[in-house]
Image 1: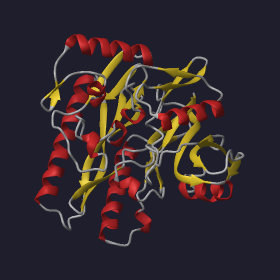
Image 2: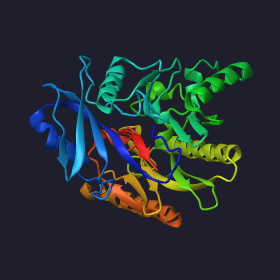
Image 3: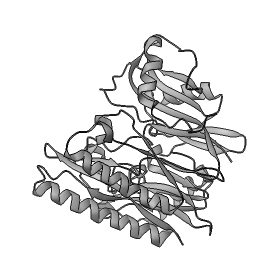
Image 4: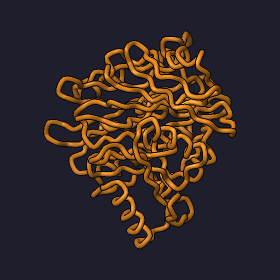
Length: 375
């Protein structure tokens, strides 16, 4: 979760997750491969805390293009099975008056706890425990308003009834009270859909217990800043184009469900948040081997200040693709830049080499977390 209580300013500390075992000799080259395409003008005074699995102990801090890189080794005997450890998942970052606090949810496993301990040492900041089940990528804090993926309610004890959540006013009241205290929030907006989504992602086991069109909120909703009139702006995913080859009835039906779910999300947001402004960003859906994969442009972040109005979005290897799908992606990029320009935001594409990881739904925002911001 990126703490976006104010949209003016710049991030000064960002954590990045990197898959695989890394030793000192490979550290520089691998991180450059993962982050080398981040725009050079992105926060020149920003410190990047690099969370990774280390094979030979602590790696000394170093610089890439003048940017401070602080390695945070993660030690674990559990295999990661070739998947990135999404930095969004194990913890939530709270901005307190005294500085940054890392919030450790009750559902955090040992890998997540070690991640938090390592970051806490590197940042010299406290850790706060909570008995709530939380996932950082499923939470967006917008000032005193908290946007939550609706499956967090189920994960925190709201009873299940068929394919929806059983109304229980007392349980909802208790849960929302805990959340408001935890995040110092005045209002909670639950984001979800009545249509249970089984999109065939690698996270299918979780998606089957999810009442959202995608696994995490940051895959299809992205804060867009505050308008001059003080209105909250949100970007919402929209199925823009997909690979037609091999798109059978099953794939067509899955995309139809996805579109319906996103429309329901839009309706829910406009009803819950007065004067909200919503713009669309493309979601590219492709059916590969009978399985629906997702590349979403919403998985990034916006920095809007007096001298900076930019959006950093994931580029899913557009320049490396030579097939017909590359043209679809190019069109999607152009379609994304139009609503950004309408809100005075210049789009900067970050071509991170995440390969299969990006097709699972995540990319730039999933593998990073804004730890501290200045305003």
